[in-house]
Image (cartoon, rainbow, N blue to C red):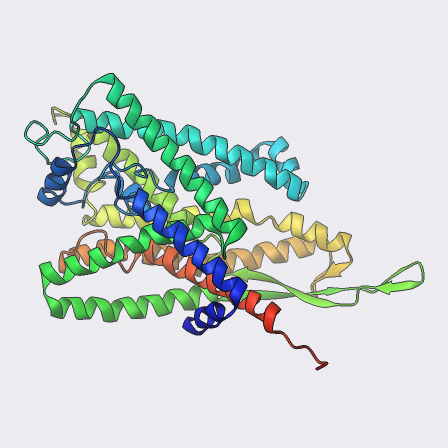
Length: 435
């Protein structure tokens, strides 16, 4: 991996692309440290130092913002609104025929869907910014902090509130623009690299907090376990089942076409990190509902706050694991359509050796997909609950670095970026058979 980056810096045009990506990352991280107008930075830091983030209902958004959310910076929302909008559009493509038709139109249709994603991102950013600013103004954003002693805002007036909402929404628009700049002029997928940047930004802090609070022997054990987890995640992320496909020869005019062999790659983790995000978001709903139980006399809310809010409770862990498994099957079922794949193979003269075209091919693909999704879903569920298990065993912060969405994003984006760099290096250094 490091060799690919070294060779890329030796190539002039690739070096320019990588330096451009680094410049955008620096701008992105700088914006994540600049506070929004009207924010009392000193009081925010005092509150963050006085409380922990273990049970904060905005933990997931805070991870994707690199810690900028709870600091109320101009990039406080991070990339989360875009992720949510992309997931919603992917689900709507299956439900709405108009979007499904756009998807089949190729590049032009995908451009239109991307435009819809941008509009939806801004709408979600406006809603999230309004909610976060309202909580900051009321003093409920950082639970456990004395809002009367440490007010988060200098002024709680309407004008300050509107300026903060517009600033955070505009920050999300700038993040989208920076991500598209990386995609167009840099290397790799821009949005993925920005997500990677925000997740990695919290990584050293999480490791250092483990070392300071639990001792350096525990720190060394965590590092050793982390390396094993990273190796296992890389192995699973690269694992795939290759279904061979043979294309029959066809005579078109005087020319013979087809006769080639290829394969359909079915990854073990076909769903990526999306099921973990779905499960985390769904489990935040009970936590948010408990905030409305101010008197604390509702038995249902008391049970929820005891069993479905605290991450160290066994019921919470089992529920989180089961939701990850469920959403893995759900997401794979809507993103990979065996019937569509079988029809396309039959249309172009392709077939799986030993399997008849049409319905038998569809049944075979469904059978293989269901079997390969099982270990993938169990793998995602296990990776997702690693921070919760670490919290119980060593009392570490639930933002445990080696597990959950953090490790999946870091490994996945790193592998994809290295593959793109290596492919571009091969294009520039390929000598061919003739010299």
